[in-house]
Length: 252
Image 1 (spheres, rainbow, N blue to C red):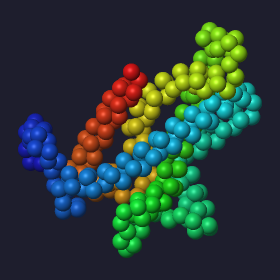
Image 2: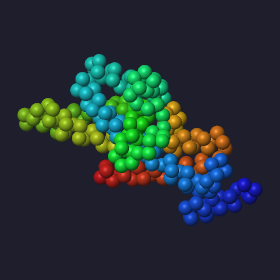
Image 3: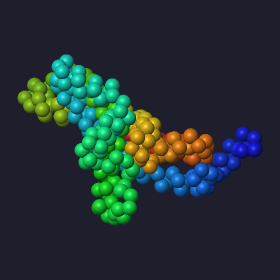
Image 4: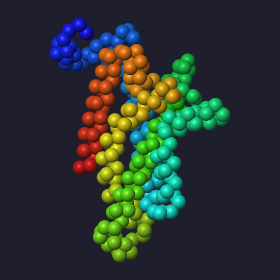
């Protein structure tokens, strides 16, 4: 830190070429080891949240498109879109953990259980239910509104009228012709939202004490641990780039 900015940058890039992100004085450990220990938990939560958001959002969007202008169209997305994810997380925490005692209130595994195999996977998924619901709720509303708009636009196309003229059932036309074409903008937005998921994960991981990259970045900011923060930002940028490349391949 006592060198000029250019020297610091060259030193940092030189370390990156050797896959070294520096050393964390707060944790007394290499930054790469810290990130790799937190990365699986964050990827699990993000992939589950994105999957649930896309599947449920598309289903709700299809319902809203069929019932356009009626109460399901107005109510479904409005509730999720206007409700903050951290508030949903706190309410589900109170209901399912405190009141009903169905799900754990925090962490990603049961401490001291010493589980292995499928028991370990089931325990981790059980801990992930509430964080995933809290993180995916906002994106469900976005995908629902996007699906609705795309389906209503495609429903006016000539090839849809031709499908109806052939005598195909409305359900078949909706699923195989309208909804299938409406998936293109959804996949595009899904890749763009991968970075937003990383940002929202910081709040959700803090609420549920989930040991992930978002919480690690927040702790690094509070402790002014610049090496950890730079490492998390660099890896997050790489994850967003990879996600967008995969979306481009899926689009083609």
